Length: 176
Figure 1 (cartoon, helix red, strand yellow):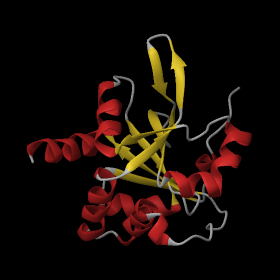
Figure 2 (tube, helix red, strand yellow):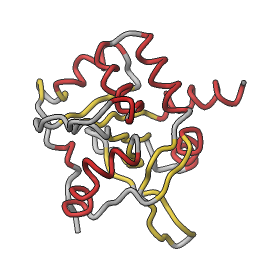
Figure 3 (cartoon, helix red, strand yellow):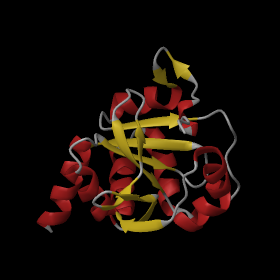
Figure 4 (cartoon, one colour):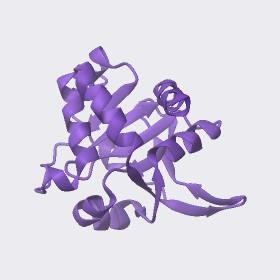
């Protein structure tokens, strides 16, 4: 079944999603895609990675560094499916049509707010977790992957973390 990702329904300025227009000018490695639907009501203390995603829109180096630190210390939810060589992480596409791994921030909150919607509309569920660095390694190991689409748990927003930025983030982790 071929279903589009919910974030493919975007508000745009030309061909660039509205929020992405702000982020792309400041952070060329992060692209954000948002739907017109409203934010879920949840405490941001229960969703620190989603809060860090939201703060990327301010375009500061501080927000980017905070996002990376939270991402690298988080457990990220993924949808595992059985593949010929074992389990594989589900993939989707970025706004340019490139393959990216699909991941979900703040698993308990994501499941509460959007789990049933993703199961019903896209046949995807948050059924396993990985550390941020392990998810980066998985994306970089997959030759077809151009990055990670990370979905927020508190609003219908996702960011695209491109392979170039993932490489930089992983190098920082492995040098420490």
